[in-house]
Length: 386
Image 1 (cartoon, rainbow, N blue to C red):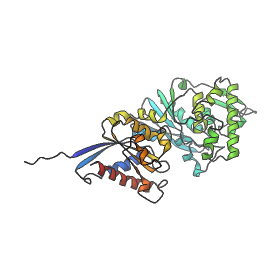
Image 2 (cartoon, rainbow, N blue to C red):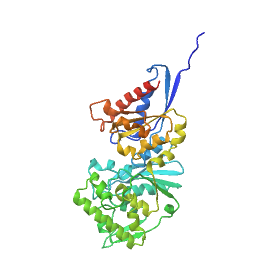
Image 3 (cartoon, rainbow, N blue to C red):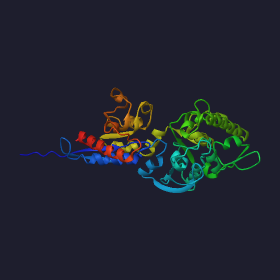
Image 4 (tube, rainbow, N blue to C red):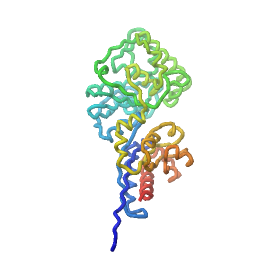
């Protein structure tokens, strides 16, 4: 009598963050899934790898794409880019929650020809996208702040949401880092829609608005600010706070010292002025995208990001994924890993695969190469599971 053994089926949840500068989280997940599926019949036994894809974000750039991949609807809208040019931006909306991000409205990635503008860039386009989201009548708006091109304290954003900033001659100011020092008066007009909508800042940035750990000092150089620009921007943000206090915002100074006020060049500060609630970015997005339910039906969780290092252990998205995955097999995939094997148990990782192990070339700016390598890694993972 011959007994047939049913083919083995391994259920995987592919839940990566983006590989910054190379691939979106969705593209990472797609490439890994293609490789995993190709492993059927290539292992020591017979079987199938079932893949469920859940591209993730932590409240930074890529948040809209991650929400759309999980079932939100993409809505497009034209806004002012960081230097005033038209940008076709998008938000995600599921009928209740809208996700709006800095990166695709006024971020570094939409600067014309990639030219950095540390003093002239504005956050106005982000405010315009928030205004568009408000027109959809959401119960809440999630404000994703990563990837900003500006250090304007959210001045540009606020000009789109009912604030008027004028110089000594009464002229209306367009928000920018340079314009901060020209503020003579601030007038606030409260939008009824804002008062009726919950605002959530999902971020893991803890910097205050100004000072040695503030937005200009820590993030300004990434946006092209030289040492003199950094000093100017820091003083200008102090001026903004003073003018907000003069305008009757009693907690303006206290909010500037609040953790996260310095995120996105000070857009975090503007969000606090609007009454936004701050939450941990990675965990909030895991809840928003229903990670816990998705992982319950899976045997293996595959996560990752561009670089796995000490910052990952400090609570970045892959660490949050690993923490929530319980006793399941957890595999990480990254462009590179600075985490020695002896430290993998700190994230309960069974294995870490890196693109750097598969090539001598720099894949960090090469989407085509990264995709091909992820397919190979996916196949190797699948083969090891069957």
